[in-house]
Length: 287
Ligand SMILES: NC(=O)c1ccc[n+]([C@@H]2O[C@H](COP(=O)([O-])OP(=O)(O)OC[C@H]3O[C@@H](n4cnc5c(N)ncnc54)[C@H](O)[C@@H]3O)[C@@H](O)[C@H]2O)c1
Image (cartoon, rainbow, N blue to C red):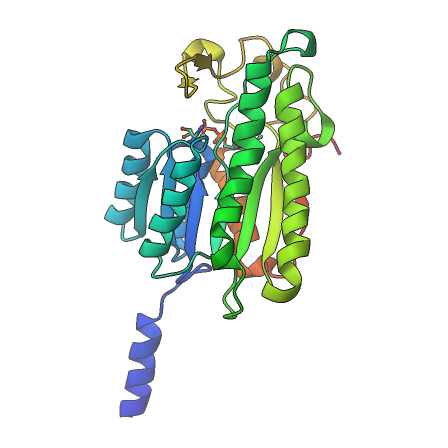
């Protein structure tokens, strides 16, 4: 009887959730898809490192997770700063008692322009943010992924339909979002055989965040040298046009929560045999 009671007590104390006990870094999780992923991961028992350049938003997400019984810290900094990437890994390892299970490379924005008008700066900035920074973060975290302790580990890189199909006005972003898929497959091949690390990309279509909202809403980011980049799509164009969703079989954009749910799906044990893939989360667009 006592044994049964202690079994039940033990069961009750056991961490619950699809990601119970796992430690996750999610970049760009101060808002949008990343913030929703952080909340979903925390609900499933993960300890979540909220990484973002926006201090107030990153801290706000961490606080709201902690208030609702989850476990999160905010580590604020710029993905374009190589020193920040080292700090991020170090703080994640301290928070995670020596381990990291999941990295979601999600931070990013678009800086559009047609090919013949795109500047070197536009080009270099977007490649640095969507390719070089994720690579450097994964390389920095390598000692915590190249281990044979039997724990689940995975990398999820956020891509885009622009990286799979190309998109007019997005030569820089299309190249970068295609490039990240090559990195994903290489991680799967290098770290799968011995360490069991899975790596997948998710190519999102039209997801409702400030990146696809009206440019006239006024959202912006600032480059390291102080240049302001307006975010969003001008009214009447692309995701802001009246027929924006006509080529989407579900005839609507996805929510940030729906997008984040696919990140959770790939991080979870339900995807334990899925690696090296580019999963399209688009409402069926481009089929
Ligand atoms: N929204 C869409 O329709 C869509 C479609 C395809 C792909 N994506 C990709 O999804 C990811 C998330 O985008 P979102 O729509 O949630 O955008 P978002 O702007 O809502 O969130 C992105 C977050 O990244 C952070 N960030 C940007 N640059 C950073 C830097 N240098 N260092 C640290 N943090 C930085 C921002 O502060 C922001 O909090 C991006 O990689 C984006 O390219 C989005």
